[in-house]
Amino acid sequence: MACSGSDDGPGEDGSGGSSAGTGGAATSGATTGSGTGGAGAASGSAGVTTGSTTASSTATGGPATTGTGGSEGPATSSGTGEDPATSSASGGTPTACTEADKEVCSDDIGVHCGLTYEYWKDRGEGCLVNKADGFSVEWSNINNLLGRKGVRPGGKDHVVTYEADYRPNGNSYLGVYGWTTSPLIEYYIIDSWGNWRPPGGEGLVGTVESDGGTYDIYKTQRVNQPSIEGTATFYQFWSVRKEKRTSGTITVANHFNAWERQGLTLGTFYEVSLVVEGYQSSGSADVKVSIQ
Image (cartoon, rainbow, N blue to C red; front, top):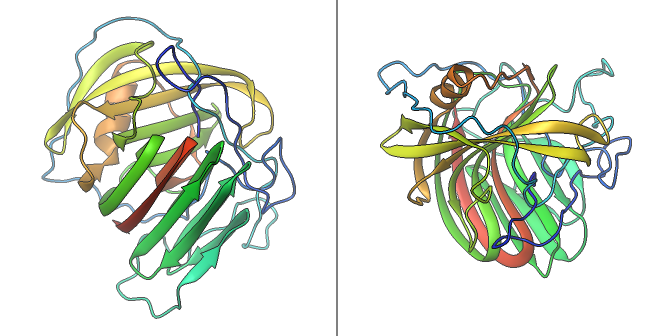
């Protein structure tokens, strides 16, 4: 995850990163809250509201949230030694998939049905099952766990459509997730959560209207925490929906553009993924997802 707690949130930092790569800080080769994805063909967001922002404060910090993920040297499948495991072709969900379901119960990165998946947990019990139309994840008594599926490196113009049977018991997030480099940024577009709404009320900089809802925009900072570049200090950018939902469309450009208007500048994309994250909790989710 990329979060830490507030007074009413989780009480301590988690750490992320999966061990499917060459190693990482408490996070081995993949990420906990760090990348998965594949090169994504932009579908654009024509005809969808572009969103607008209204400044509410100039706070630029905020608590870390529940944990942060990252890897130092994610697993690669391109043979170049430079890029993380990537999805096939130009990215995005294929029109049809005949691959068998794939269950992973230990840290792993891979490609399934044209999308890059990543699974990571630090301790506790849990498994991710990759399916033709998305994935499912369940967890029990974990400290921090992330299961996600998306495109790498992805880009600004992806549109994520999803439907989830989401049943957290404790702290958890559901939404779009990813990282950028230069600058190193961890970002979240949160549509639903468990018993604590991230990132805890600090760092509010504005709002954005998108896909039928209003999202609060936050900027928070993580200091000396695991990331896709190893232990680092970096900012997190957040859009958190005011009212929960567990299905719909997320037009990511609306959020990225709104962040830019607030001076929150992203870098080079590492991933755009649909994530389910759990922190010091138990729960389950069955997610259908399409990324265009």
